[in-house]
Length: 397
Ligand code: FDA
Image (tube, rainbow, N blue to C red; front, side, top):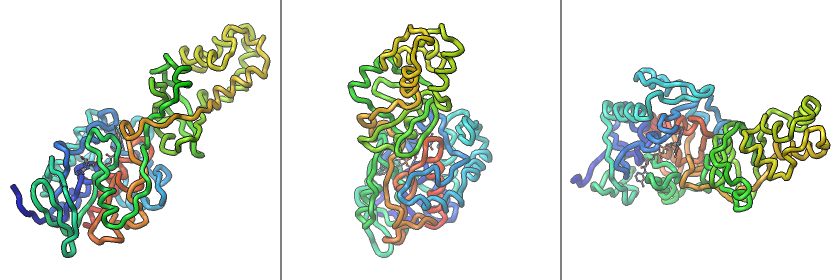
């Protein structure tokens, strides 16, 4: 049992950001301790990217992040870039692949990234305490005193890297926000991001049986649109396009879905009417949508599936085109933190240094990773923020 331990740097949270920060601090010769309440480190890395960890996106720019202070992320992303992280992956010999342009995943699995981080921490001399609850954090002298399940710890610098609220069953807590508030920081309202939509009973009834049907679609809300995979689920809507737009959506707002993105459905239907006048509407619709969805769409919008194209007035085709290009609905809500990949909002960046992530209110206190009000798109941007912000703090602590 340790009664009182002294470290130069204590990092709370052994996730992506905390481990990166601790590696950098320890490499600079700082006596560094990482504390996590979970029994295993970096659990979110382990489950990320369907187990393959989408560890970065080579095109990470401020545009790919949401924050009340959009310029905040620039400095850290410039100083530790996606290429810098990729360089570590390559030097370690981790096989990886590019899924879509710039989106990088592990070939074998996420454990490769975790092993790299843990080996780097160990060889730099960093100490890791797992399954250790932090009960209280207070100021002492110029530094901090932490009351933990393993005894008291004194630290010159304290780094909060305990993440956001998503996936509480994996041990996510609002601890970083509590500490931020305790020391006088504002916390930008948090909400679930990169999360499936839930639909109300009316739509669920109409869409019954479509669960599992996927297609390429564009989802639009809050002045932003994403074109990507789109999936009907038994609760509502999911797939990358939906997860992306969920971060821009606010409760009560509608979402517009384009089921034939890049195709003006009105023009296309009229052209097909001219080219195949004897074909049934159902046959033509199935050229653009998966079969099950095509059938259901005609039912939902009360269209005569077996009518010949030639017999359908252009006004009917135009109305149907609207249901294809601009299907508009208001989700009942999202699945919330239970399944959200990220937490939007967080520690207000206006009181943090964008160079070092240090508090402007309490010298020696730092916030990095997901607990900060910087949230990336889907595609490896969130890990890149964890690496970049962790690295930046690691140079300063
Ligand atoms: P992170 O949550 O990783 O780490 C926080 C650590 O703090 C945890 O180890 C936790 O146990 C610990 N902790 C929490 N409260 C504590 C307390 N009170 N005391 C002590 N310790 C405490 N991103 C991406 O870029 N590519 C991807 O492929 C994916 N995939 C993905 C899948 C799923 C299912 C989810 C939920 C999320 C993703 N993400 C992602 C997002 C990504 O996982 C996330 O942005 C980073 O893990 C954030 O890193 P942090 O280090 O900030 O927090």
